[in-house]
Amino acid sequence: MAKDKVQLKVGNTLSIPNKGKCTVENVHKSGDDGFIELKKLDNGQTLIISTKSLVNEIFEREQARLHSPIIFNTPSESYWFSVGFLAMYSTVELRVTPSTLKIVQDEYFLITGCKTDEGYIEYNPNIETYSDNASITFRRPTDEVFKTLDFPENEVGNTMLQTSRNRYIIYNKDFIWTLFSIGFRTGSNHDVNEIRKYLENYPIEHTTAFNKGYLS
Image (cartoon, rainbow, N blue to C red; front, side):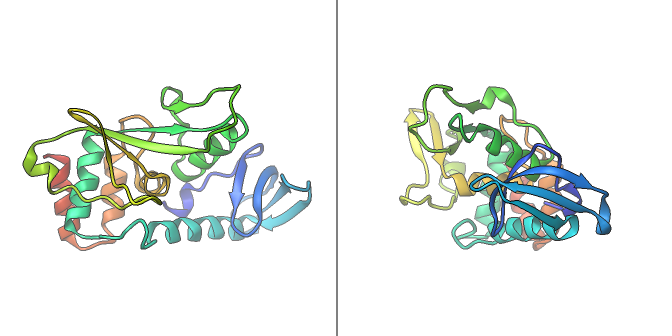
């Protein structure tokens, strides 16, 4: 995610590093001299923070997420082959509760600059009992490709689950939100050009591996 893609708009509900969940009340000016008026959701406190500082905090949070050892436990050629495979063949869905729907939508917009595809965000307006989650599904490829796939484990140690004879699903919220940061989207129309641009920060072998997975 580039700093110039960070989206800050009045009414957005954001998870701000070190400040918790806040609503953007006003955006004053723009650029280096601008500042943002926030209201904390937990106690109604008003915060004033410079636009530049807030953008930097959000950017640094996303960079930390991208380079987390939990997510990039194998930042290898096989990992990027797997990301390429998912960019071509996967569908991403979000599951939220009524109280977190807007927060998740705004967070997604903040990171991607896009609105969530409503066909791929699931919530029941009458149920608050389950927690937010994200999933990515794909059909089983050839045996040769399948044995090459390499995904980070989720919090309970599972990498992927088989839901039918030829269909697999990954439940790993951190992994999937990291994919959003580099160009994945809800649904199946992922921004491959943005992913390749991100990969310019890595050795050329990783781009080659991504392209092989994408075309596998």
